[in-house]
Image (cartoon, rainbow, N blue to C red; front, side, top):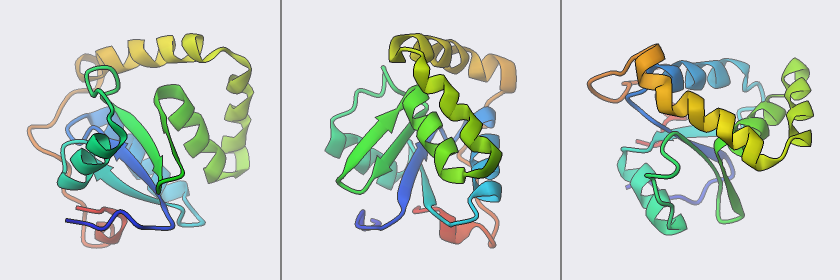
Length: 138
């Protein structure tokens, strides 16, 4: 079991979702400050965090940003926080904070609900390459 004490922010993602996996690879590519580590929702670490935060995964089943006992964000708020941390042109996404969370999350939920149909699904969680292994908690 991975110790959850880390100075990095943990992104929990759906490990079998093609959209989620490609998004994780994009975050890794643009995470120049090395702020993030990753764990799938299905992993031991992911399940431990979900249980600790008492999150109902039937309501939030695709992304959680966990900041080591400080706070956590789900759905559109998690996406916007992650994009802000990436800096550069990604910060333009901060414009979307002007919309109410309910509105942002409704759009997020629509995409999440259809993600397997539109982008496909893997039989098992992504296995990181040796170069990326350090970015994943388990």
